[in-house]
Length: 263
Image (cartoon, rainbow, N blue to C red; front, side, top):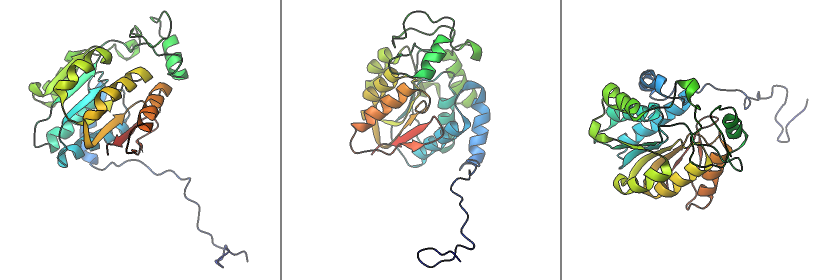
């Protein structure tokens, strides 16, 4: 009979299970999350798993007393900020300000030298895109047309204020390209408990990290929505974290989403 080097029999070996998939759901706080998902499902392109993680992160920020604002760079129709708002209404004991940044137009053109094959293919498939893919702040006109068009600030206000019930004084919308709006707003934001980055490409992701990361409190969260989607986003995050001390673990949410907890 074959034996291990330590003498154990291989007649009935322990089955290999490392390759088996385990379900991700049910989530912790599952009932709350499923209820919140029904509220925001028509206002987002983000996966259930990333929305669930965002809810859990926002809830933890409130239950643990993390100070600071909830900040989102890349809001679209407000689904992810809505998830944070619903978690805050259930678990928060002190008011938080929601600073929401978006161009409220179509995505800007990618930089074909850094943003990767998917970004280039999407740009080339968008009928309104002309000129070089140089990462300039030019909207890819028609990019959101298959999804009903780009969002408006009123779409976001309607969801957060009218539907969810956040005090209108706590919702601050910054309309325009990040490079124009973030520098002028950062002084008013102050401390940040949760920073959610849905900036798509290299330049926007890197810019928002450089502008806002220092304002994230120790123990606060930074969520990267596009890390596994666009090569430019991954590169921006990896480069930034490589020079950040102390090192921070990049937590996996799903194929595209990641987050860190600031140390």
